[in-house]
Length: 250
Figure 1 (cartoon, rainbow, N blue to C red):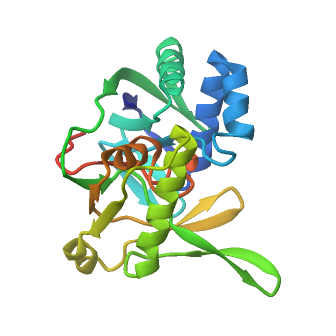
Figure 2: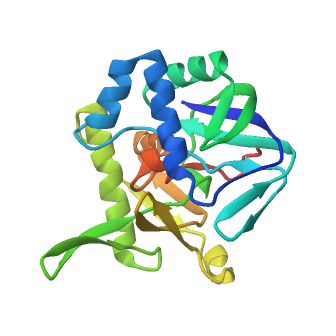
């Protein structure tokens, strides 16, 4: 399930790297409804590593980026939150209904409406666009230190790691192996037409490298659904890996 949160933006500014603020905001809102659930999600998660929620970037009707800030002008805004966990969606819906304000640091946006959106339709293939950047990486050791090597869709390894991550989420959520697998087909025309599709994003005191590109995916629908609702790739609970169907309109 996912929520579409429509809000009113006044003239204001937020940090360019606001993911941490939104993730913290979500945990606070969950705690206002069920403190034990919020603590479990933050400290443990499902299958010891998955939080099973994601969220989109903030979309503004009128804004511009300058340096490390986003300058926002009066107008409409949209934000999307998604999870396969019904309680999560219910708690967020209730909290935002009771206190209709989105807080990003000291900046506030007034919530005007909250819509619950439908699950994926039955199709043999899905064409997705990204509502937030996608992170796919592999751990590597260098001089005794562990670090992450971030992958690009131009590397074959990208797709194998993408699939393995999705299958691990499925096992953690359903407690069993999926019946099939998925095939990911990137939009090469889009990728070739862009100077670059990578984004370097700061999370607290570290940086991650993410990618943004449309892609098609076909195969086991329940596998696709878990990615659609919980996010594809890594760091979903920090606002990465959220997608929408290509014909989607904000």
